[in-house]
Amino acid sequence: MFTEHSKADYVRMKSNYDIYKSDFINLIPLKEAIKMAFPPKDIMVPLDGSKNAERALTTAIALAKESKARLHLVRVIDPNIYAAYGGGANATVFNEDVRLATENYLEDVAKRVKESGFTNFSTKLLQGNIKSTLARSYPEEHKIDLIIIGATGMNAISQAVMGSVTAYVVRHATVNVFVVKDDA
Image (cartoon, rainbow, N blue to C red; front, side):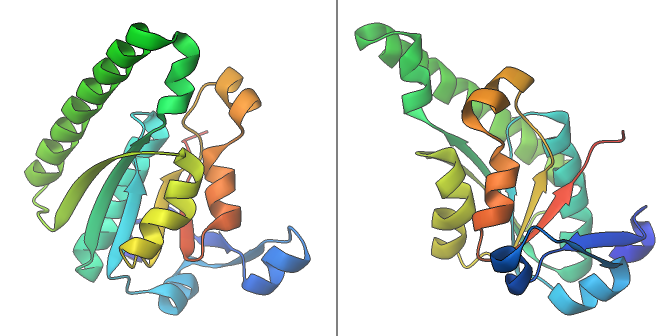
């Protein structure tokens, strides 16, 4: 069972009441949280190549195996972010390079997931606003019932300028969000 393989004893969950009334987070036993929210059928895992995203992927695979859920491994690139690196032909070439690198990354992820013995998954490369795509668009279009996401992904400068994608997803997603923290 997933709870037996997890090192966590407790999980933090927000109820709808908590989201609207305050930032209060309930700390409840992990086994109780799983009984309340599971078994999920479709789990989305946002990927950005960071260590925390990889930890989230490992957690998601274990949970999906246990619950027989389908994994949606999603990478979103925002062309508007890369436009800041130059306009015209330079931006087009840069965006194409980013797309190709991201496709290679997703192929590598798919290979590793298959090697783990799990096959009920898909990979998606999407373009658009990263935050809204992960929090609302993709989950609503694909009937996602759980998002498993790394606590942080970007470097400190990007977070200061753009804000945390994870924090946005936790606040704006209409489904449960499981945040995987680093080994700090």
